[in-house]
Amino acid sequence: MAWKSSHRQITFGHIFSLLFLVPLLLLQHASAEYQRPAPRELVITPHERSDSDPQQVHISLAGKDHIRVSWITNDDDIPSIVEYGTKPGLYDASATGENTSYTFLIYKSGTIHNVRIGPLHPKTTYYYRCGGQSQEFSLVTPPSTYPIEFAIVGDLGQTGWTKSTLSQLSKKDYDVFLLPGDLAYADGLQPLWDSFGRLVEPYASQRPWMVTEGNHEVESIPIIYPFSFKAYNARWQMPSEESGSSSNLYYSFDVVGTHVIMLGSYADFDADSDQYKWLEADLGKVDRTVTPWLIVLLHDPWKNFVKRKV
Ligand SMILES: *[C@@H]1O[C@H](CO)[C@@H](O)[C@H](O)[C@H]1NC(C)=O
Image 1 (cartoon, rainbow, N blue to C red):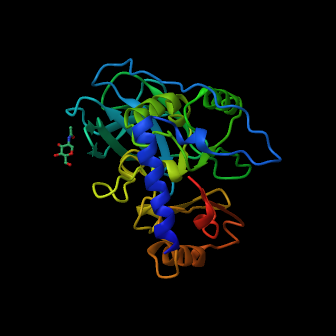
Image 2: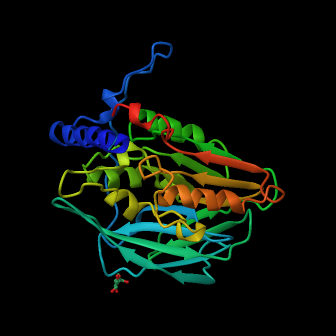
């Protein structure tokens, strides 16, 4: 029941934003103690490459010593291939993956490619290109020994504040980026997902970005998409399969002495739910001698979920 009533609020919120194009961000209230700075302007990042060029490139950890490379092309004939190597322009390894796409009302996404590469060496720079196209990207794999540095940012969005946050972040040589919810603030306006993907590409193509969903990822519309996550699940594939989870909305991964659990605030979490059972099993497998650090991230506490206002 609690879940249902809260879900209705989200639905109403999203319809509201769809109709009036008001980012839900503006509707949230600052607490009495904390004066939240005023919102900054929306930053739209245009598509400036050709249809066949990879865009919105981002990477994520995908099981031991593997990384998933995700990108989008507007041309659906581009193969889902990633060529890579440890020297610029010299690709001595390659991997093939899969493509997907989705529709949302009248919007049709580009072709979304997901390719898992590896095994990769720790703390090593790899140069790679996507779809056999010429533009080169580079990434650094996480280390296999301490220290490890995580960067954690929630409610990222795509405003002037996002730009300043990302530019601060780029001054740090962090290993893994953790984003517990609220990515693009698209709220049904699908081109904003594309704009967000282009905005974060310079960062998300270089270090693994591990995300979980917030309320702005739900994007439900009564009857047609009662419980959506269409864009989020298609665009931000996380290592759920690699971590024994049946849903992209919750998963876990290991990196240097750390077991990280990314929970879903907007997937069922009662004692009979898949998520709850998966979490119990996942916690049961943690070996604190191997991963003494346990980090759990979620957008909203499960307990308080019913009280939230969207
Ligand atoms: C995209 O995936 C479909 C199957 O889902 C496949 O038939 C098609 O060949 C793929 N396209 C490319 C360019 O690899």
